Length: 527
Image (tube, rainbow, N blue to C red; front, side, top):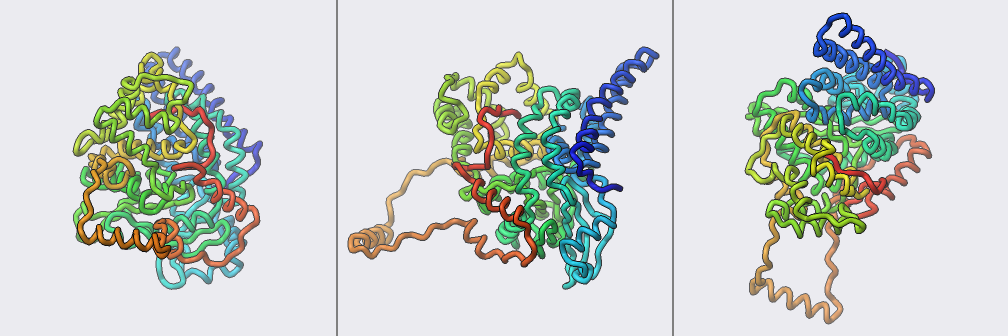
């Protein structure tokens, strides 16, 4: 066990070992082949050794390096099966496990952030971390009132580590390129870097989690743990038991896979509409399948963790997405093209064939064309190959489409969710979830004539308006309403840096319709 390496020179040197070690192993592999070993056997062993080092280096560094590894883990479904095995194991381990901080470092950190008598807050505190992730680790404990809690502790120096990593992670491209041809690392790294400030701010995370916990309290499908206490660098919440989605992916039966997939799709679409927040860290380590005692799997719930990275969308996902998908179902090429151009997916400087654009989008809407769709690794590999092949029409068209900054995070979260659904191999009624929670997707209904009482009420309202006595309807913003009901955070020491970061994040979170923060203008959409 070791502390998180903080010095930029140390972290850079460790990241540099990835491409250098790969080159060394490639030379070793060549030697083995000259010595008579089969090319297939040597290649498999080479991939295994590379995967083991990938976990070792990214897990030890944590920070931005591990963050990229977690993001990549949901896309292993798109790899050819002959390549995926070793990396699937290594990257899946990054979702919930990394080398933890030593106990002495944990004690020192808690004393600094909760006070020298921090142990008196707990009846029990497990020294062994239950999970160790990119910027912090979680310990299981029993709070003073007897309830089980999760104590999330941010690694000292996590901020410096993240910034250091994101300036160096271009080095990973050479390694990733050997097992994921066509996968663009640079846009992923840039988008993750834009979210760093939010994830370091536990005050902001606690506020987001309180909103979601209040909205889903007593919900039959989704459960979010309540926040117990928040201090700078420490977040304590109710403990959430359940089966990690990574275990469902590895060993779950089909009913469990289908239930997890259905609820994951429901949370993506309806959850965003209900809370005004898009959970932006959709890898299996952040979700649990929570059994209901003596109830069939159809009654189990989805547990959701980690609200450090969220996008604030007060009206839910942008209606233009739902409208374009609905029109695609009806093969309305011209109308789909008009929507995409209006939203900036087709820039004014380009003229594309609407029918070709519709064919490009066909696989995206394919799961909604049927009552229930079975997601699979094979299906995702087919889509990835279609986009990655430079000779294909889809590849050529994709290079001409634009991904507006307001859609960068939405695109990544949606693709990550699809990746998890394919890992699960779940059969999901995706059209049902889109109709229920995706603004703009449901068929528009024709207006009906008001009934007599309604007409009378409208007439009375008009008379009041003429007399100057009509009341302006109050805005119904669910996020604001829920936030008011949410308990205030416990008082604690908050650094000026954290306060400034939170304020900057709040101001910049929704600058455009469906705004998801800052971003570059010419990112290319990729499956």
